[in-house]
Length: 285
Image (cartoon, rainbow, N blue to C red):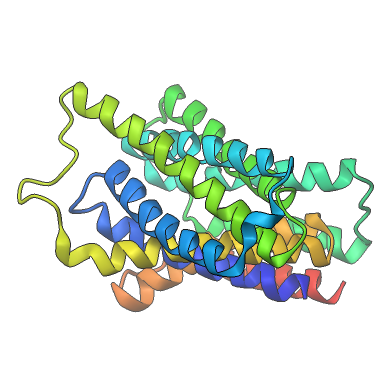
């Protein structure tokens, strides 16, 4: 169960990142984040009302609220780092955030077996290589490295927080709703602040209404990924769930290959293979 839901998480996050990446070619990244999360918030609100999830309200929702604050901060740092580049360094470096939920799991007493430890090491290496790390070229600005690390550990913190935000299915709906509400508020404030500094929140042609279905997909896929991750973390070791869920860069790279016909570099193909080997070790360990 843990491996299945964690792999579903990586699939959903990978597709969401791919879709978000395409949308940000025409629309400012922060606008994509806010609009997609707003759509997801509306859908989750309807689910919360019809399932009576409000009855699950409790102190654990503070974890969801905290995840909602940390998430947009991590995204903003990540996008700024990508802007500073080079992307071939920033993208794979962003996966080091998996250390946060893995560390939490070890702190809580989880002790993965030898095969699982090997699987974790192989999978993490595969994810880094699948991002296509840039080994030559222009030097990386220190600010880009710092922003990437902040973003990575922010993503990892969201992993850890959302796993603690609920214990039941209806409680999960409520936790994800609270997280998304805080996401939209925090992202909206950031969008307002950037517009006050003269950054246009919309492309020249106005709001991209034709992109609304794609924006909805990105937001809902992100929500679904959070949900499947929580299920994975509750049904097995967090250390295993976190590493398998962090395989999403592989999905993004493969989607770019299959849909955009982007060529995979040799190091990316090797990384995808290692990630698959690591996944099999984790699933069988």
